[in-house]
Length: 230
Image 1 (cartoon, rainbow, N blue to C red):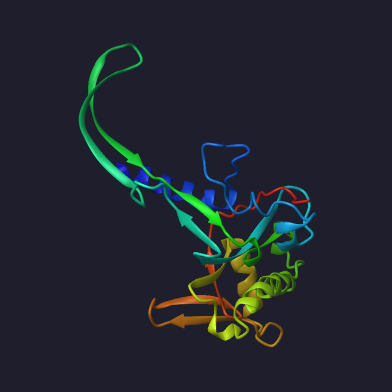
Image 2: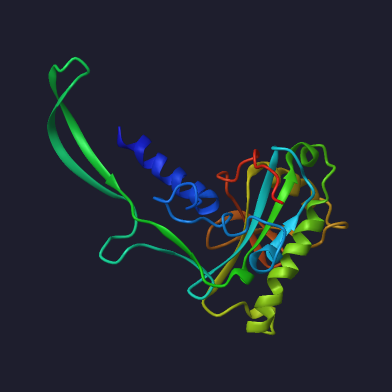
């Protein structure tokens, strides 16, 4: 019975990392896209790539640099990280008519937050038109190339040798299954898209898509119904 609640927590956290906004839900933490939500102005707007989509059938790709000096997760002091599950045992409750009955009760708690210390190290590709992407009319490789080099402007300042990576940092790309399907078609054409490839990592024993030196992770919390970022 608890599995459904645990899955709901996991899905809410995954979606919140991208979409939570303290302006509309102040009781929750601030997600990535609430910080990368405009194409105009100085600051993080410089790290939002416009893929040209309009309407409300858009999606995004996120380039994220994880690390203590870049982007990382937090929890309040005195709390325990991760989902906490407490068995409250048998409890007497009442139905809608006031009739008593007994239930077995469990309590679930999770304290969670997101910190972006250096906005320059993350990039959002916004306004990817999903219907056009499925039809093969979106040059997704073009937008990924732009995002990659915007992020590399920061990483090269910290470490001029990009092959060594950033000290204490991990970089990854997040996209949903629709985008990954489109990338699969591009990746099969190694002549046109040599930067896209599939690797089999011995440690994980999984096939992992790579764009240049960055792993691409499937994040189905990224929806196909985003409105246009302006």
